[in-house]
Length: 102
Picture 1 (cartoon, rainbow, N blue to C red):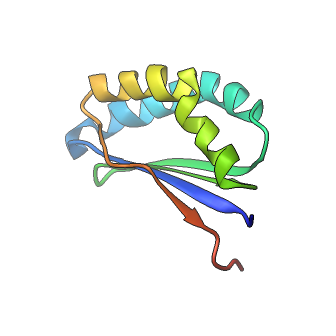
Picture 2: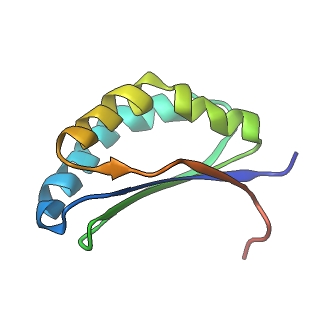
């Protein structure tokens, strides 16, 4: 199977941008080492917009490997719980087959 990318999106009140951005940096301290342990990871990107949106996009060598992220305790329970506690609402996570790249 070809590479896939996984997109996790959330929204929050833009007035809480500084708080969400700071928490995003804090969670990276334990998420980065945990995610790096997963087989099949090609790239991982995370960002927070002052407009009230948060996005994580990861690229994996297979859909099977991308699914590991949804079972990773540090991501699915700890980080998600911390983000939801400060008002971030997540949408359904979507996985896309990679169509083309530059």
